[in-house]
Image (tube, rainbow, N blue to C red; front, side):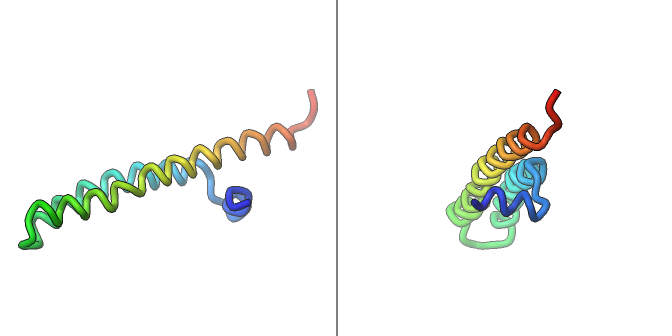
Length: 81
């Protein structure tokens, strides 16, 4: 399972959530940068912003999957009360 492998490599839900929020910010930055740096205009800037913005839901989903895995993993490996 990919989530288990990522967890074992040290990736945590907080890392994925941070990447999601960063991609939202990067989407705005890439849109603004494309508007100023390229002569292609709004259409090209919109494509860049949307392309980077589409990463956020993937990172949020990965964060949720990791959070569920971490919760279940902690429940299975915690000492019985």
